[in-house]
Image 1: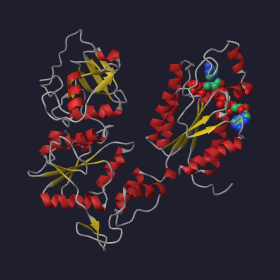
Image 2: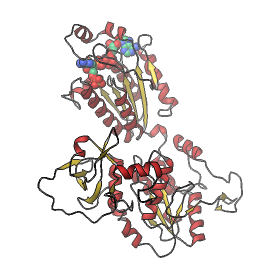
Image 3: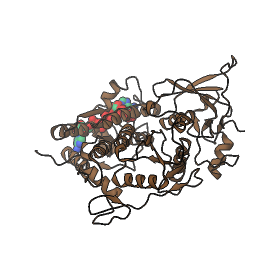
Amino acid sequence: MSANRAEPECSDDLAEDVTVLGWVPEPAELSDVELLLDGAFPPLGGFLDAAEAESVRTRRRLSDGTPWPAPITLPVPAEVATADEIELRDAEGAPVALLRNIAPWSDGTTCHVSGPLRPAAAPGGALRRMRPPAAEVRAGLPAGPVLGLVADEPLHHRELAQVRELAAELDAHVLLLPRMTGPRPEILVQALLAARPHLPAGTTIVPVPLARRADPDGDAALAAQVAAAYGATHLITERQVDGCPIPVVEPPEMLRDSEDRWTRAGIGPGSGGLSTAELRARLDDGAPLPSWFTTPEIAEQQRRLHPPLNRRGFTVLFTGLSGAGKSTLARALRDELSQHDHRAVTLLDGDVVRRTLCEGLGFSAADRSRNVRRIGFVASEVTRHGGAAICAPIAPYEDDRDAVRRMVAECGGFVLVYVATPLGECERRDRKGLYRKARAGALPEFTGVSAPYEAPADADLVLDTSGLSQDEAVGRVVALLRERGWVGSWTWE
Ligand SMILES: Nc1ncnc2c1ncn2[C@@H]1O[C@H](COP(=O)(O)OS(=O)(=O)O)[C@@H](OP(=O)(O)O)[C@H]1O
Ligand SMILES: Nc1ncnc2c1ncn2[C@@H]1O[C@H](COP(=O)(O)OP(=O)(O)O)[C@@H](O)[C@H]1O
């Protein structure tokens, strides 16, 4: 049997020369660690080795032929891959699991570690009290069919009627597995708990920290594996699931009758309900959700999960050469928003950030990268909590700007403004005399002179301040924010 399959627990008495290193995996990888420890990925007992990963990638099967939909692997830096044992830690640095690194491997560019896992502490993670290990959940289920549903959206009247219909048809117990993904997973769980009065009596609800996979088919099939591990004997899903370990049941067509009840036989005007796009548009606009669509309690959680655009946070990242006008425009935009918008505005200006948050960092590529990503982290937190973050670093590297976009976009709006004032004009302005020094060789690694600036190809707005007044430039940013729905019309000028 491969080193990655479930195995007897390895012993604690390691030899003295065993090297143990700590490592903090990405949040999605930590979710896999939790699921492995909880027995939610049987028969896996740890991360896949090279042969198993290749077998899953090419055949969607483990090497012994067992269907397995997605590679569960753990990439690490090369120096970590050399350790015999790796202590996997959560974002706060607390130990979660110990990985016996029996078979480290490389895919040519990235190192991976593989081997059995054992817990390093009592099970933790968000909402832990609601989610016992898979075996415990299975043991608590009644005998007979169990209808599983892995939910990553709230359930409204139509979906709830579908679940009730299928449960009655199969005479099944319902096992609802809210999927803890996205920036506010706890709200999804609350939205699904709010649906309990409308689900069959005794429905078991267990949140699962199953991170989303890029490949939608592999993702759906992995969700099916998890549902089966927790005891589902049938799975409700609209998707085709290859190699599903349990029978799939498609949700039946439900229509709304003239009294707004959802039935299999119902007919009536608008009887199909709201499409996903219609629901999203209503949520974006803050429009009410009709009572035939959902209950007030579920609607409240749905709105918390997806607030109207003009109530969500956003970030504006100005990028451009020194002297391009980033700080000037950032300050003017701050003033404009402070005067007209309801959000708290946080200005993260290059010079100020470097004296505070990023004190001690220089201008090497690595330090600039750290600087920009730190700014991005703070901006994403401001955005998550409904504020407006305005950032004005040079941010010369595309990778770092992309990282900021990713961090922020998970939490709210993101706008990249390229202040594309030409180098000649920036140099002519030379407000701080830095270009002169750089040209004289007294200031090394100066952006545009002796250090690179990668002009963005993905800017949401490009502003050349050599041909645009400050007011016009800020007006364009505000117009874009308005067009995207993040800000409304000003009530007064
Ligand atoms: N070598 C070098 N290259 C570029 N800029 C330099 C350098 N040394 C000091 N300065 C001053 O630092 C400001 C840029 O800092 P940033 O944090 O925005 O830069 S970066 O995003 O990390 O690249 C920049 O401010 P702005 O003129 O507001 O852009 C400069 O005043
Ligand atoms: N249309 C404009 N928009 C912004 N700044 C302008 C404009 N026209 C001239 N400037 C001047 O250019 C300089 C830009 O400096 P700054 O805003 O500190 O740039 P950065 O933050 O990109 O280094 C300021 O002195 C500002 O007054």
